Image 1: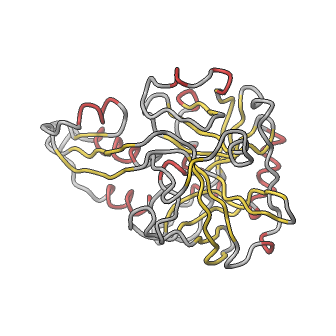
Image 2: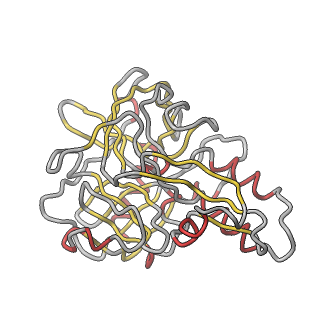
Length: 302
């Protein structure tokens, strides 16, 4: 999830880095572009269940950063806009309940459950960065190079947001680590080499200031149920401040709702409303119904 990413980017843009430290600034921005963090207060998803056969992992083979998505056509995945800003050659889509934690660990995944990416895009709304945190279109779409495994389920899209009301139950799912925190340090930090190697850390040219992520986890798909706090035009706010929530690596992951006994995709994990840790802040989910026509058009033209 983009945990108040816009505020993080604003703070970074106002920093005064040492001379010749543009690499540090660019690296710091990319550190928050696709972070990893597990469902907070959730439970592991059993293989071959409805949630498992609809949810996919999006893994960066260069940095080990993670996102989550939902299969909406035999070769199309829907996710967050900020999950498709990397080079498509660096991303793979994983159809499994297990997820790599580090660069080079993809050999642990059955090759039959891995797909590369033909093309991807995000909505024009996502280009509008509003520092006040108002609504914007954090939605992206991925066209796979080959169809998903045959046993995976194509999830119908919710077309009418009036089917959702405050208090309704939403099922969230995502991959990621069970612990994540940002650390400001310098060249002497023993955690720095591994963080830099895995794309979780960046320094200025003289390594007098470094920023890295400390992470831990088992790479398991998890789910949690929360309720709707309120509805807005382009997104919905979920009650995720009671230690039951999505976190960074769950970005783009599904917000499922049951309508007349059918599981449909209502939203996508985007960000939180404040800077508190996962499980302590309300979650923002991009509303699928608002972007339904765009999604349909992209499926037809990609």
